[in-house]
Amino acid sequence: MRRIIVLFRKLRFVVQEKSPFIMDSSEQRKAYLRRIIQKDSLDDIYSDERKSQWNALSRDDQKKVMESKVFIGFAKVSGVVVAPFEHDNAEPPFPDIRVIVQDSTYYFELGEITDEGLARGVSDAIKTGNNTGGPFSEGDPLLRMFREKCLRTYSTDGNPVDLVLFYSKQYPYDPLAHLKLNSVEIDKLVADSQFTRIWLYTDWYPQQILWKRSR
Image 1 (cartoon, helix red, strand yellow):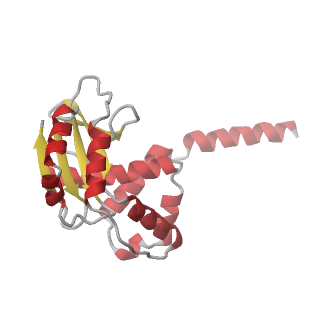
Image 2 (tube, helix red, strand yellow; image 1 turned 45 degrees about the vertical axis):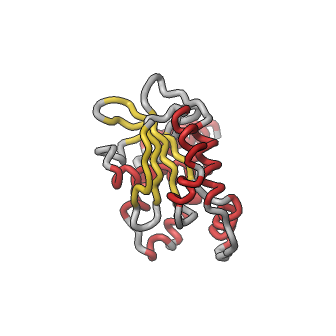
Image 3 (cartoon, one colour; image 1 turned 30 degrees about the horizontal axis):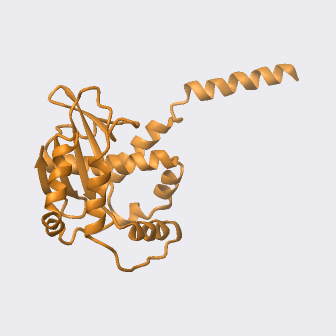
């Protein structure tokens, strides 16, 4: 019996250390990210295999996947990063994304603009499969995100950081009108913030930069 236990432990060690089919959480996250970037057909989006791959990720890894997806889309249309796939998901108190720009470290903090009620509805729809609708605010979430991000201090080890505010769940109907309406407060928030540049980006097709401000 003792010999069987020893053999089992050796076999388990070999499987854990040698098997090429076992991926750690970072590899699983990157594999799923590559899939959703490269395969956007409805058949793949709603496939059981893709759903299973998503559910296998931790909640933290799911969050990082969505941040990476948004960052890659933003980087492609803005042109600020040559190789957007080559980035790291940083942990607080650092900004969300760490990447190399012109041979130097550069950070990007992300902030999604969405009405809280709409966000809950989208989350419930994903979980239950039932689509729900209702009214939502356009201006309040935009101003709230400016306040939340610009008043915060980030660790960057002296490296620059940009802020990317983005639309994903909520469609950007007329954000420029709300920026103009709240221009006095937004200008002060930007001027007093840590960010080198602030971008407004939509992940809705066609992906594009809606607004940009340098400090």
